[in-house]
Image (tube, rainbow, N blue to C red; front, side, top):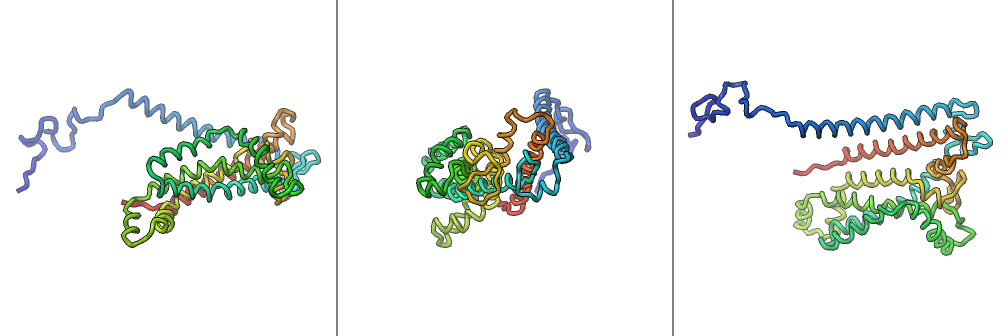
Length: 323
């Protein structure tokens, strides 16, 4: 027979032997100054990060408004024209957007297949010793300064492309070499995040596939990879955002003049490269050229914000929860 101990009964411990609804003094929440201080510090950090973001958006919006209010600027021309020449009053954003998308696409063509293949190898095929050796080596690439990647693109990748395709085809400054090296830059990001997503897939799914007679390759490609799709998608979108915001590589290797071209072997200037070039101190404050920097930055901000929103939607849409 089950024995019940009522609150306030003689068998109940003295510290809980109180009437219903009351809490014994020893069980009440105690105020710990150290924990309160840590919570206050963490809350302050969160507030500072939010206010910083709000401040950035406010400055971008305010300065961009000055640009769009200028007599030389037309919003219609800004969003439809393919000519960006501030010296003669043309402010069409598409040459800069087109070069940014070309270098980012080139980077993804390099980073996605290589990064997913390496992640699959580290997660499903590599031994523990090999994984512990290769992954830190790969992540070292993320610590190399981007200016080094920029000169690598200019002095190594561009000569390689010119020797393979011809000097008349590949210009000294081109978006292809910048995009390829950007792909090498974001490769550790794709690999690390994808490998984490693949490793998080429960082992029971792999064992069930093996029990049904699937090979290791079939299990990896048809079971593990789809199960980790949400994490891999997030890795891809974060890598795209990283490539779009990259500055030094495109500023050094892609070119220093806006050009609306779809030829990856010709010079073209990206949004970040243009901002880095014209913000070097030669522009007068509050001029149209100066304010155009913030308008370009605002477009860049909305592009990366859109990708982050899409990333969160993809993660929530395709997330699989296992018990």
